[in-house]
Picture 1 (cartoon, rainbow, N blue to C red):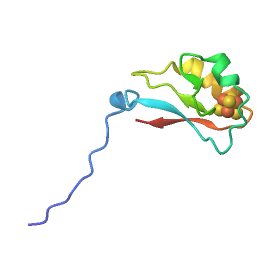
Picture 2 (cartoon, rainbow, N blue to C red):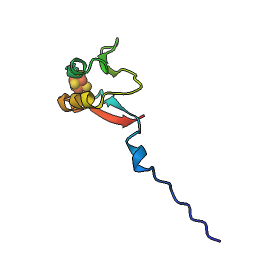
Picture 3 (cartoon, rainbow, N blue to C red):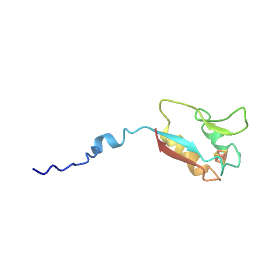
Amino acid sequence: MVTRLVKPSMPPSLRSSVMKAPVIDLSSCILCEICCELVPDVFRINEAGYVEVISLDDYPQVEVDDAIKACPGDCIYWDDI
Ligand code: SF4
């Protein structure tokens, strides 16, 4: 008897429900603070003087996408959480 292992794929209806969070590549960040000004509920300057992403259960997609587009260092991106 031959058994084939089939890798289950995620149904399309669930793909959009994967949680994502913005991530900052600090090596490219020039600390212009545009992201903090655009989306202060998501981005802030921490005590060490670096930009950080505030831990949230959910992130506003449109606002974070705006910050991604506006970031001159091209250092904000979405990642699965
Ligand atoms: S907009 Fe980009 S370069 Fe400017 S502080 Fe935010 S992450 Fe850094």
